[in-house]
Length: 496
Image (tube, rainbow, N blue to C red; front, side, top):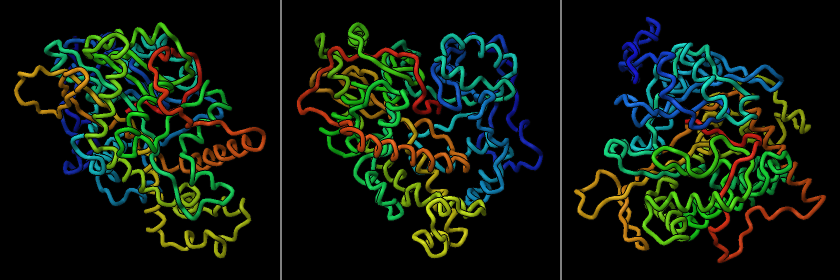
């Protein structure tokens, strides 16, 4: 039970932080060491650890806590400034609230509120609230979750015990009312990834494969080579973004077959399918049956058919919500591809363009001269929209369901009737993992893009390229396909 002292969030802002800027003002709690036992490991990404609440305090039931991580010492350690850099202030100058944030953490919080929420819809984005945490609480959490964390996550980063706050967010894997009434809710987390093929004229002809094969499929080859995955996914993002019921269902079936870090299922907030933090996968018959058995509490169907019905339910919710159309529009803010946007980046940071030098291009007369001839505002717009699109390409979609009795009064949620089972379900859809991307990450994006294309081209030279998205029509079986996690390397971020 949490009974920490109450403080006002105003106390954490400097005196010159105008009240008109504080849209996250509220009463908060300090979590102390005695409270750590009420929070358990849910998962993690590259930057944050996610904890779910198991106690009884009404303030925290139906919530998750996002705690910052810090990279361990090493050559790959990313040092992130405690505040926005001067160039980032230029980049986000259109948003006064974001620009005025005294710390990077507050700026990232406001980014979700003021940049991503208007683009994706206020009903589907929860920015969360900041809450104070003591160092003793963080040290206790650090010890408690150690045995649950994948070993490669532990080697890569640790809990940031120097941070005095965390982010409290609604647990979108549950219906809070369902928890209170002891009803069951089931949810799925999906990482849709980039849903379009780039057509920028700044893509080199040597990289033309990017115009005909999705980034996800190309990246699978590099991940397989690096042993970050043990098998190639059948999933193609173009299917889930197609607007076609049949193709959306196929995409869900493919994600279920090889979930990697892109597909997870939760029953009342507890993971029942997928992994907590990414890694390698293999088929396991017993776990597949365990998932089928878990569904019997929600899906009224014969043995062997519950998984099929559940995947149909997910695809119907995606089709009906139409939210992926909205998400796709945000992703398409990336008009120039990283091969064009990287040139704008060098102009934003007032540096000589290393890419033009590497390509032997004269920035004033080569193919990129039009980019380097832009006024600063034009370069800022390209980079800003690329980074917003990068957030949209990396986010997760959380879809939650709960059963409804036919005699229930009108629901505040959208409702789906599943013909095969004769059941009605309330459902809600939320976007999570809306992290603001640092300006300096532009260089990482460019280098990764080059590695991905180079890997695929080398595979084509040495052997027949893998059929990454190949599927056999009509070959849809949910038997013998459940997944267990092996120790492996990270693929994507999980934290919100």
